[in-house]
Image (tube, rainbow, N blue to C red; front, side, top):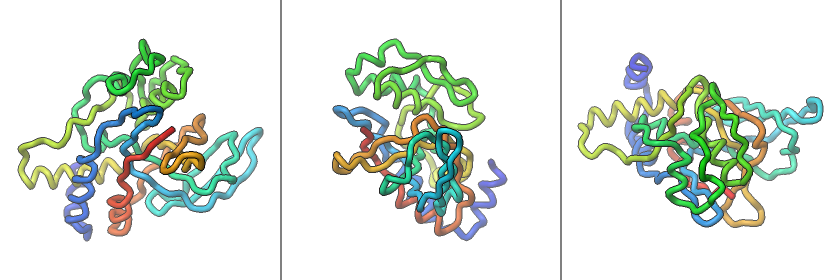
Length: 236
């Protein structure tokens, strides 16, 4: 990582934008439930037009996005009827290398009275997928949000702790560059589409499909898109 960070320091990236991205990510709140909606801090990637082919009883969809390149989605759902699709990077605390505190399930329990979550285990990453079968929409969301990164096996998830209160400017700049490095690592993305029945809300599609993608290269144009793609989405 240090070699890549050094290269980024010597690159033509606008360092003001690098710091803006870091600050915006740090300002995001923790994931929580409000009513029946999940408030999900994330980075969004809008997919371009879909091309489709049949595969057995399902479909293989392909789309382009400037930051990620070609995205392939295998699913039984017909996504071609949707107006727009977004890939979602929800693993903000990993990007910021924050200290692990408990599991995501424990975090959500602090903000919801959904009794279906009680007794659910912490969820491992893709290398150690849990055998639990969540039954409710809330539980399924929590289960999916427990599978962050390819090759990253952990029984703990991350709770947002906020930025350190006393770090030097040079340390902060180094941390900001490390965020860019982590952004180029493969991650398990969520696939969301705007929900027509709820203003400003989104719903998951192709939930059975594990979509693994990564930002190919941090260029000045991609960096600008990333800064403008930091969001808090309402997920139904």
